[in-house]
Length: 507
View (cartoon, rainbow, N blue to C red):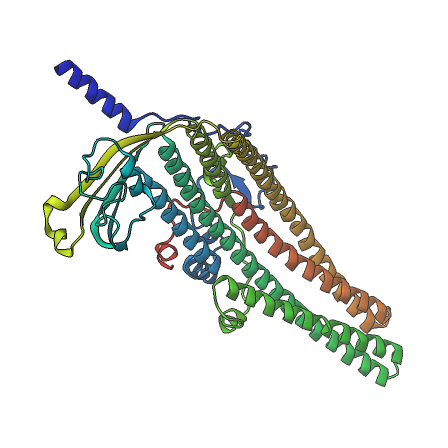
């Protein structure tokens, strides 16, 4: 007897805990990763990429307090971040819905009905049942021949209250796999939110740097406009003295207008960048105009740029972790599809108090109950289960390829960003030399013109060359900094382990 009880206990434990069918998820190993990033040796004065850990707040490397202040506000103010946070809450709620299938379902009920049985229905069969004595029906109640007892066919009231309960025993792990899939979706949603923050941080830094670059170009253009006006006055004075012709005056005046014509486009670009920053921070148009209007220097890159090592990239980039979580979810969904081929065991029961009179509801003798197990086994589904399993396996394969593609794209992003960062620095160094030479050429051209040994055309050419060189240098300086931003975006941002609390709280 004790042995039978032990076996029964083991059987019950196996039935309740069950097993888990389908494939188990295994974190994919990177199929290729370089030993180090392929950075090219640079001149000593250029910024160098080094395999060192990165500060999560990477924008501080640009040493701009206003940019740091804006980045600090971003997580709690950006509308895309709020949407991502809401979607994460949705995924967590969905996980709770799926987890509820692990527990019994209990529902209360109460009803009142007014009923009447049919004289020509089931009760009419009582007249043909053998056994009752003459003058009685099948229930032993008096009746007339084959006519049902009139009491049973009279309208009557039925009062009832009670409960129904059911519990599916997750013997094959169907529910467990569903919970596993939903949990992976929560992870994917969290990584999507993190990727949203990385993208928004990079966009904010890029817009800020471009704004400072545009303001620098505005300053250069205004300085060149002042120089052009000075040249115009000089030619007017020389023309009045008969030293030069009206042609030089006309050319000088045209140069003034051409330089002034550059300002409206730059001013419009400045306004658009201010609005872009305002949008990223969830502000109305022109809300940050006063704060950002004062020109500042283009944020300079540091001499050393920590970039980590390639083997850590898969753990750092949110989009790679999101793709991994999607693969995990798809693998668990295969397990759900496999479990659907197996029998489903259910424990169900109900209890109620039932009576023909309302006062019967307080009488325990009026109780009724039912309890027992049931099993459902799929026999013929028209191929639905097989096709569902094939569909889930195809989704798993798609998720696996997506993961590989995401990882490969990340490696390309980093390599391209490193290349762009290094080459733009070399271009900027060349442009610095160009600015030095064009400035010298303009000074010589003006001196030769004033001495009367050169015509004004040489001055115009020198002015235009200097303006172009200075604007190109401003663009390149901004490009170096924005390429650094792109590099950190490619590396996965600052690889934060925790998001700012304000981003989590704003729902």
